[in-house]
Image 1 (cartoon, rainbow, N blue to C red):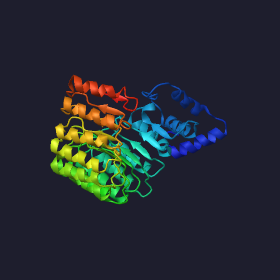
Image 2: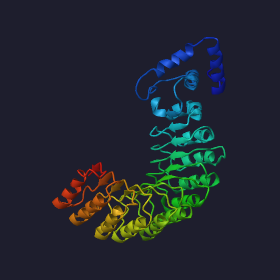
Image 3: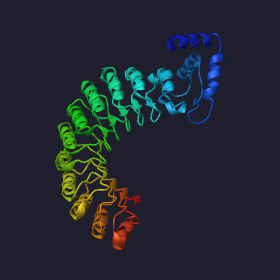
Image 4: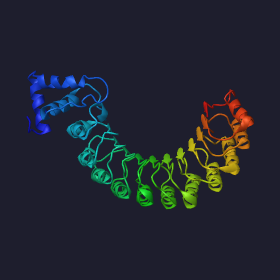
Amino acid sequence: MENSSPEKSINLFHCLNELNDHSLVQEVQTYLSKTGASRLSGARLSPSQWSALVFVLLNSDEELDEFNLSKYDQSEECLLRLLPVVETSRKADLSGCGLTEKSCLALASALSTSLRELNLSNNNLEDSGPKHLSTGLKNPQCKLETLKLSGCLIREEGCAALASALRLNPSYLRELDLNWNKPGDTGVKLLSVVLKDPHCKLEKLRLWDCNIGEEGCAALASALRSNPSHLRELNLNYNKPGCSGMKQLTALLKDQHCKLIKLMLFDCSIGEEDCAALISALRSNPSHLIELNLNYNEPGESGVKLLSALLKDPQCKLEKLKLSNCSIKEKGCASLASALRSNPSHLRKLDLSCNKPADTGAKQLSALLKDPHCKLEKLK
């Protein structure tokens, strides 16, 4: 058994099971009976025991819809040993488990199985990891819908590999999370080519703090204008779209085919003029967006005035609005409160923390929570 392949070992366990010899399986089940996370942490299993564990998991009554590596042991060895279990699961959460490119090489084949969601966030995959994954993503049998690679030290080269794979097989992926990587303008421009493809069905794209400047943001927004009807959520927090990036983003929001419902622009160095243009675009197409994050930007008086006009519009469906640390003063807060009294039925959460509403503005905003017609649930 020590040198047997996993497949041969599993077949042997089937035979033993039919002969009512459950000794090794029962031995492995003692590990699984441990409570809490990482229940195999520190356990030194023999190859036979690993194979028995795979057999138990594949034949247990437990739901295999989601495989979570942290339940067993947050290690690369554990993942590689339990790969047959990953291949039968619909979701695999492998986040923060100390994985490297070696795991990605093994996982490439798993992408052509029943796997639909893969979370590899917070592992040091670097550029080599996405290159290996791209081999699996290119396979026509790959039906992966969600890929999370947040905080994986991916740079331009890794992003280029992902973009190349998605160009060849663009029609299944619905969610791509690249938060806290560094693809830069070059990587995002390559990704933008994928977004232009009419076969691309991406609905959620997360690019928080991805070192994207004016050129990359402009290319991204321009690509989405070419294929605007699928994307529902765009996160560009902590990037620097600049004038041309904001101009393209504004044009996208004006497009009647644009179906964005969540737009995140936290700390994007957006000034008064660009904020005004952005909000004017939303006024011309107000019926889709339900969440807008403009925290740590500078909308100025004109931006807040336009935002208030947007909130008054009965077509406006905004439910969550974040304006923390936006230098909004008493007059702006009063304007927002007045707008919400005019159209009280949609907004649920309003964040105006770290502004300067003064007593008058604060009182007017607080009064909204007492209004029986106002649906505001949370005010900061």
